[in-house]
Image (cartoon, rainbow, N blue to C red; front, side, top):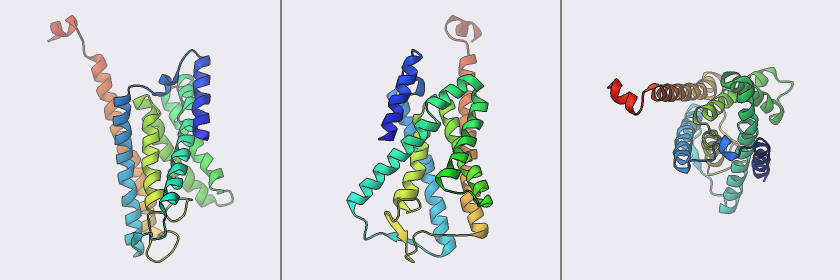
Length: 243
């Protein structure tokens, strides 16, 4: 519900500027569908590596949850979709669109990532725990950076929504790793979730997500270079003369 309200508010603010939702990339359905598919598959593919790695490190395999009812799963899917839409339309929607116009893309992306990290201090109630504060700022800020860069490179909020949903859907709905409780798979031990510490946690909870951010950034830069080259190539009669 709140996602729909944010979308309506974004439309209203853009209309006051004489623009529409196309400014947030709600256009070109085929292109946006491809970007959404890539985003969901990318982070939806990274998330299982993290959770299966947790299970292997802890010696606590995931097994199907026999108590999960279809109605409960659908309700949790609804929550996951709404939470992703809320955060993306708030942090990567109209406000990022305006910040890019005011500050330029590089500064706007960094600001967006920092604010997204600080936001999670409040959502996780991390105050009083310096280690958790630093971890949340680093990791959620890094994810926010990836999603803000996706907005800049594609010119659309669809790509960050897809990336965010790919990560959250697999983590929350498959591996029971979110605030929603037991989902499709649960630890064999009966613990609420698989917990690891030490080097295993460092590799899986820090290095792996940061590697995903790095791979995404590499892809974004290659896309930007290709587009810059395409714009620089002569077209029409000039292209014939150049050839």
